[in-house]
Length: 67
Image (cartoon, rainbow, N blue to C red; front, top):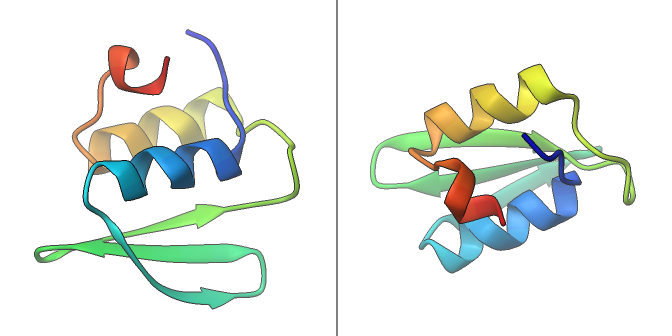
């Protein structure tokens, strides 16, 4: 699996209908229906694979969505 940055994942979520609710420090919180996801965004630094997989599971994304 290819890793991506937090910025790129945030763009993908917004394209899928997630709404940016707030930003606190480097964590951007997105909301869709009753779900909340907090994405750490540290410039263009790639997310670690475990964090990326966890966020994808929470957002109901698959590998094709992040390509």
